[in-house]
Image (cartoon, rainbow, N blue to C red; front, side, top):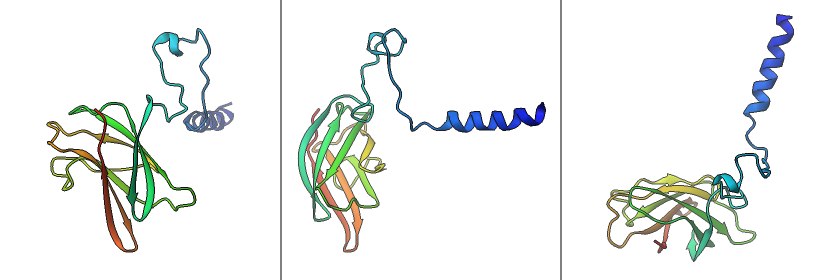
Length: 147
């Protein structure tokens, strides 16, 4: 009996650990919108995305979207959409603040999405900054955010 129980437990843990499957909210399940759960997971599980415009990053046009508000000491989400057919760089770093990143925490984006810590206090003239490393060196670009 013990020898059969161990493989079943291991298989159960492996199955439970796979967090890639979509989940469904049904009315009355205690997790839907009636329980205060407002996201529908269509945009990465966050609030509404606001397009800020486009930047040139590493010679490629990139649309930048902001998720949420920028508040000192809080976190804000960003999404990047690279031009169709353009290769997505292996590493994209981003931060909120000034070009030197003084007082800011740089974050490595997960693919084209990231969560950025907003410095407290937020320096005057702060923007979203993005940095990629390419064959010709490091390229930076910035765009104003919405408060």
